[in-house]
Amino acid sequence: MNGAQALIQTLKDSGVDVCFANPGTSEMQLVAAIDSQHGMRAILGLFEGVVTGAADGYGRMADKPAATLLHLGPGMANGLANLHNARRAASPVINLVGDHATYHLHHDAPLTSDANGVAAPMSDWVRKSRSGRDLAQAGAEAFSVAQTYPGKVATVIVPADHAWNEGSAAVAPATAPDVPKVPASVVAEAAQALRGDGPKALFLGGRALREDALHAAGRIAAATGARLICETFAARLQRGEGRVPVERLPYFGEQAADYLKDFKTIVFAGSEPPVSFFAYPGKPSWLSPEGAELVRLASAREDALDCLTALADSLDAPADPAVQALAIPPAEGGPLTPFNLAAILTELMPENAIVSDESATAGMAAFPMTAGARKHDWMMLTGGAIGQGLPLATGAAVACPDRKVIALQADGGGMYTCQALWTMAREKLDVTTVILNNGSYAILNIELMRVGVQNPGPKALSMLDLKNPAINWCLLSEGMGVPAVRVETAEAFREALADALAHKGPRLIEAMM
Image (cartoon, rainbow, N blue to C red):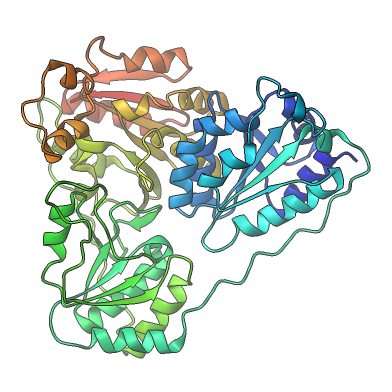
């Protein structure tokens, strides 16, 4: 058994059964090892950002890692933006990055790079194998790291000679570390704070936004009157009919600060106190109100369900909190707008759908208006690096083949990783993509004003405009094998969405806003 075979066998024995790949010459031994490994699915992405983003979506929905296979340092560099998002989402991901043979590195061939240095900023853990026999051990360690609650990005650098050298063997799967529990004294401190006077909030993020943890949070809210608020960009929020609802912190910093200003007590679980996404002249970065009591119940890496349940029990909270009722808003006809699009989506979204949301400004109504839709999971742009939405939907569809995935995708961000459509077609993934096409980086037009730029000229505005020439998403989609239709009215959107959701497999709707 060569090093590559031992590594792949170890990962498969650990529970890794999907590899999103964009390999090159240095990874051919790994390609062959995956080919011979029964039960490991290989999925090709035509750009490394698709590969890493798909692994993020898979990890968020499967709660276990997929592997990525990337070509040397430059290949990994192409995928770093979506690894940044994955790391911010605390998604479990294992990257396998090829490298030149150890004896070849000193020749400084054209693709030679510092693979470890490229990987480090967007990984929680990086390890280069020391020998062919060490490769399998590195894989087992990577799996253990990736499974560290709630998830980490682990990267193994694989020199080509370590992959092809014979004399290796698979190693026993490594166990994931125990999930850290919150001390009883911290739970007691949070309970005391929530018993106090004045407006109070329970601020939730990470795994605290899963259905069972939200149920416990709802019990706490019922016992204390605390409002439930979640981070602006959550990795995975389980919401809709029958689930405990939670308010979402506004995106713009001054709006968020105003939203929180009256709270006297804020208890955080699964999240740190929020800060503004960017710095702006004369606007706050720290968003929690001055003088408020801030209590850290649990970090993102401590057991959210356990501490929220313990807190609810310590408060003698009722067993059955208030939950969201089904609420379908009316949809006006006529030209398509963010509001009638959101209302139609709420009406037609099937139960247990998964939404990958990178809709930006054109989708501003989608999140609040779908609060009363049938139960679903909502995934967001955790790290702010655009180009996440389509790959994320790809990975989610691989993880959950029996659930409908809906990608709400802004046109500008979609162009970063439009190659994901090809993978959806190749793998026959059940993804309905809605491109919200307003022909611009509309959020940047807003940001231009917010940073204080006065009277921007045509050169500045041209850098935010996507209409010269206009992008035809239907042609792009059809060219990559995904049937597509363009709609401009609410009536046409309803018909197109109903048709797409009624069929298995990928579909694209270009919604002209």
